[in-house]
Structures are given as C-alpha cells and as structure tokens.
Length: 230
Image 1 (cartoon, one colour):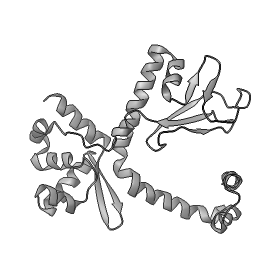
Image 2 (spheres, helix red, strand yellow):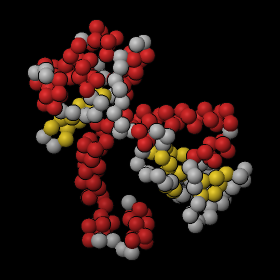
Image 3 (cartoon, rainbow, N blue to C red):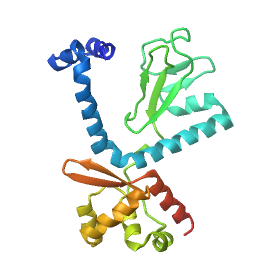
C-alpha cells in the first residue's frame, strides 16, 4: 500500500490529508477501503459482468487462435495501432521509458479490457512480467441492444413467464421494473426470478434499497444455444 501511494505522490506532487493518513496507518483503514470496493463492484460491475466477460472471452479466444495460426508476432502487431513488433523489439508510441529484458520480468501479460478507453495501459514492476492492457475486440458494441432469439424453443422448457423475464434482462432490472415492462404481477416476477436464480440463470445484486437482477453467463449461453435452433 505504501509503495503504491509513494508512486502516486511522485506523479501528482504529494498526497492530500486522506491519502497521507492511509499511508501512515494502512492496517486500520484498509477494511473501509475494501468495503467500498466491494460495494462499487456490486452496484457498478456485477450486474453487467456476464456481458462484459463474454466480450473478454471472445477476445482471448480470437488472440489465442491467431497465435496458433499466425504466430505471436502477428498478434502483437495487430493488438493496437500504437504498438508494433519487429522480431526483436516491442515498440509503443509515446512511451518514453526503455525497458530491457534484463530489467523486466519474464514474459509479457496481455490484458483485454472494457475500461481502457481507446488507448493502452502499461505496467512494469519486476519480478512480475510487463503488462499491457488493451481495448478488447467488440467493446464498442458492448452496450448495444442485441436481438433476443431462442424464446420459442425455451418457453416449453422454462415456462413463458420465466423465458420472458430472462429475455428482458438484457440490462439489469429490479422486480418492480420487470413487472412494469412485462405486465406480470410483482409476486409472479419475484417467484420466477427466484427459480431462475436457483438454476444459475440470473444473479441478484443489491444497489441501495433495490435489488437488481441480471443474466449470468449461463443464462446468456442458454439463450444463445436456443437461438441456434431457430
């Protein structure tokens, strides 16, 4: 913790009173930070994680296949416009620090991300391998509304109401919101969501006084599999 705060202080010319207090006594203050990070995860990321993870998984699959078919050099040259590989040197535009093999840790860790923006993020801290976080393929379409298919095949299995709710969870929503959208009673929605959650098809995340429900990766895969047969 102190090492990270010292790094921050060097880049921003010092620490304010809150961060200085954290540096002086990290042990007593870390539990509060941990709680806030967990709260942020529950509200801002967890309800959307299945969709984000799907984009990241597709990117990893694409890069792995590209390595197998065309070699690691092709992947490095194709990763980002500001990065290039010439069989001996990896060059990143506007990066002033020269990192040699002796100074860096072994290997290179590539991290697809939905949160880097259009650029790259780098981290070099031996003995860890150098890290490059880059925008994942398809991240630009992450929040586009996608057509939902597969309902005709799923309805006889899950029931009409549960299938309808699963398709409505394109974005996370509360019981009240789902009842308003579908015309189902709040009690019926709650009962169906409980069944879907028990089956691992949706997850529940508390956000203030509300509970948001979201499709899980399993739910996404089930809809995708059912749509393939239509």
